[in-house]
Image (tube, rainbow, N blue to C red; front, side, top):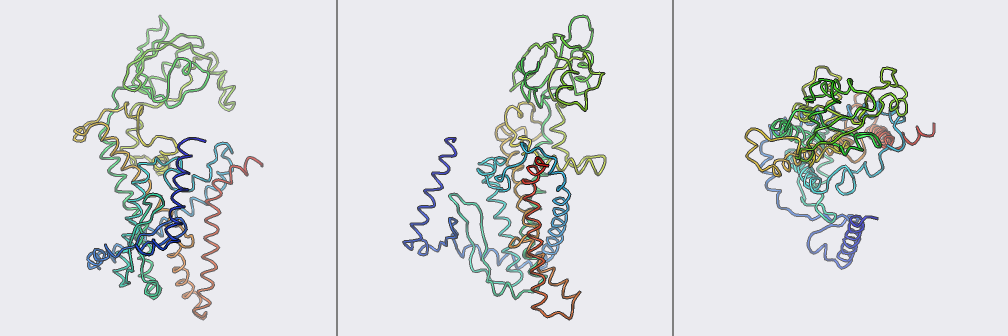
Length: 463
């Protein structure tokens, strides 16, 4: 077991012990702190006056509440369709590549995709925005706020607004739906704003340090790995054996492909590349491309590959990553747009964010942001990406029709309203019971569809 994990478990154990002792001695009540299991809720009335001042702009926030309701319903439908659409695809994922249960939790330090520092900052801001938006619409609707506060589990992990429950239940459904919707909608809007800053502000300010192709992967036990090439090396030249007369310059992916097509298995090539800002040269004796594809990819073992030189790298043009991130909406077709958005959101799964060395050494900073020191530039860029990512996750997750989540509450109220119109003869109790049954069954279905992302690949391995 790693030292970091042992330390984390020890800190959590000490924290839980201290919370239990403070609760038993009555110290928590004395300082207006409530315990919900290991979670601490530090309650205060401070901030309620600020909610009241903002709530005076009732016309704007009612408009914002209506916009939020539409946005939550859109994401509720979209995510439900995506979860259903992914059911057969989950069966095709190899069990070895299936995500573990820790991936379902968007908590820094537990989910391996989320870096601890950036993750904690982004999550605290996301939850604060979520709860503060709820608080404003609570006051716009005329419901009293008993307290506000911070939620702790070793470190601050969120915020909360505690409304008067009876007044909340007495609200009209439309007002209640607005209040529930503003939390996730505020996160989604914040996510879009941070994505714009990250893409057009930061990634729009970088250019590759030099033309070439970036090594994205290296095949084990093949020439590239044996020659010392590593992922994120920038290949600028490939000198072929004497007599070919070809320009060794590699400006983009097409140049790389053209040069490699002119090689043969057994050729000794000289490769010039940049890695972590240093210019290097190495040699490699090329393998047989046909033999590689015959061994690892029988569907692509074209006879045309026989005798061709094979280096053993995956590559992309030097400007592909920066161009893709700087212009995430610039696609020629709807299908390309969908895949582009999916790639943008999936950067953590490819271990591309946070953007760090050696990736950052591939780029030079241009424009007004060049006035920032490079470490500060990349730190801010990463911060805005994680603000985008975690706000989107918090907002999208809370839009799902799952019991106790905001989307679930909107869904339940909407069901009751729909059933009243479709079945006017039913009593209020009958409508409430039927709506609650559908609401719970729908929530169980959504939870199963989420769990299927982890179960499906393992089921597929048994079929």
